Each structure stands twice: as structure tokens, then as C-alpha cells.
Length: 124
Image (tube, rainbow, N blue to C red; front, top):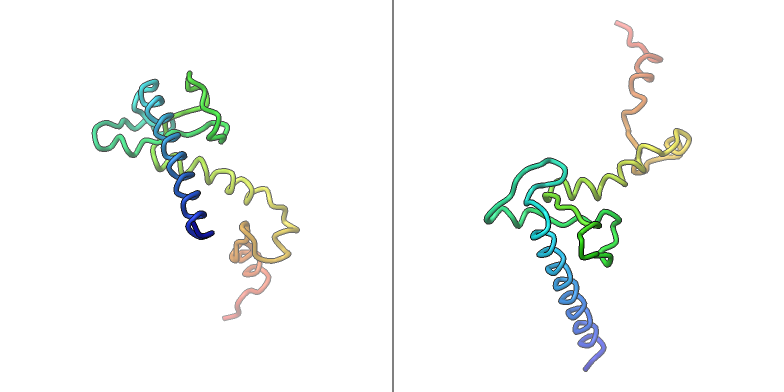
């Protein structure tokens, strides 16, 4: 087997194992918990059930206790929001001196627009 072929085989095996692991804890979580999003409380049934995901509270996908204490069911939207929340918190904690050093995740090009307009009044 070539290096490329071996690499492809390893990646395929890893993906298969990950999917199997996810299916295992997802099925268990769906049996343990009501089919309701833990954040927005939307209910799911039938084909819509696929929109309900298992969120790991400690973000460790390898920690899957049988009692489900590390899981909560979240809809796709709330799950996505949960994982972007940390990025948003980092943006809000960037100090003002860091903002003056140039564009970053927290950079807002119009943040000081009001102050600039006050300093430079237009004459009519």
C-alpha cells in the first residue's frame, strides 16, 4: 500500500470509528432524555429529530458516562451558538489598548465614529 493509500485508509477508519462512537452516545441520549432542546425548548419528533444534537457539557467527546451526565440535547442552532459563545466572550474581553493596535476579531471599524463626528463638526 502506498503512503497516500495508507493515509486514506487510516483517515477512513478514524472517521468510521468517530461516526460509530457518535451514533452510540446519540442513541443513548435520545433514549435518556425527552426530545426537547435544552435551550430553546423546541420539541422534535419524526424527521425533525435529526436536528437534535448531543452537546457535551465539558466539550470532551470522549467522556460519555452511561448516565448521560455530560450530555444535553440541543437543536442545531442552539448547539452552534453554544460553540461560538466562547469566541464571542473573547471578543468582548479584548482590552481597548489591543483594539488600537489594529484589526482583530474584536475590531469594529465604526466604534469611534460618534466621537470623530463630534470633534469634526461640519460647517454649513
